[in-house]
Length: 445
Image 1 (spheres, helix red, strand yellow):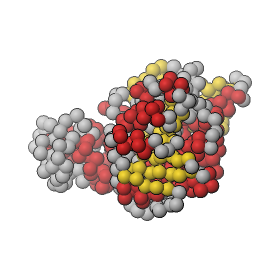
Image 2 (spheres, rainbow, N blue to C red):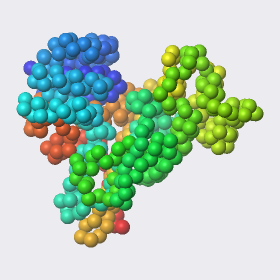
Image 3 (cartoon, rainbow, N blue to C red):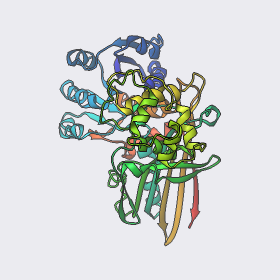
Image 4 (cartoon, rainbow, N blue to C red):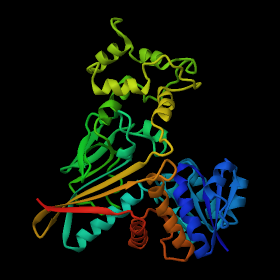
């Protein structure tokens, strides 16, 4: 009997494991879930007759390979740094590998050997990256098949909190890796606009956000991703004069996050002395640098940032507890880690909270000399803090592709992302049966 091995049973694994277990009895395969925390793996398997939970330290090469040897398809939800180690094991053991992570240069170097061994190493099978690629390329090719030529491409995605569970002034809660949220945007963002290369350095990134309109949900903010150009060739957009990819946030988020950046609270490059006993108020005081002593800490922060003391951004900072005499409680913490610890508490999804994912593509194109615009929008909501939209949209694509691979469906050998029609068409078709649908609006410009 064939087996699929899932490395990792964290928050993004829930929907993937549920999907595989649902189809295992019909398709005739077993699902092995391995995690360093056995209880976590057991919770995800839930005693299912076609599943098995195993305790495994994935950094132990011998134990990892012994388990992989028994399976046919490996799905790695491990930290990205471990993917290449798992991939090298797959080459030795002759196993297919699926991940939801970006392809690293080290992993890409294994392409030739994977092809020679007849192995599929499919990556970026998640939401972003993943569904963003598949849905964008599908529509670009459809436009081209209808005689159109894409001249501009704008794509943005956000993991958010659903309006019915939005009860804080940031209008945000964590539905994915908190550290990635805290460190988001570090480095310079680059994109092309009207044929010109544009750069936005980190210290201005959250000042220079754009607005998009989501049908029935009003306006949202979008800040630029680090690299909008890496998929230009893969998407077939060599002739497009504008290519922009970004991240969606609720109105009011970017100005407040920009205040955190200006204060230095997203800095991960130095350690706070005695951070365990340092309070958040002490940290903010220290980050003010030279500051006249007149006024309260709150007033001096507002003065430094040029904010109204009673304005919305100061209220957002206060709500987090940044001005309170509360110990950070973590040894050897950077400001970014101290901030993350606070946000883990303040932005936590409560058990009954629903998250929300928004993805929007805007294609500007010419057809028969007529400029047009196609806006394609996906809005998906989770059920609760365990069964999230984020987990579904990250997990389902890998699950669908893994099932097809086990069943012998054709797939390209080597290291790939899902931009070939034989890969993305069946995935998108099944996602639609699961309720993942884009709503489209077309207009003549």
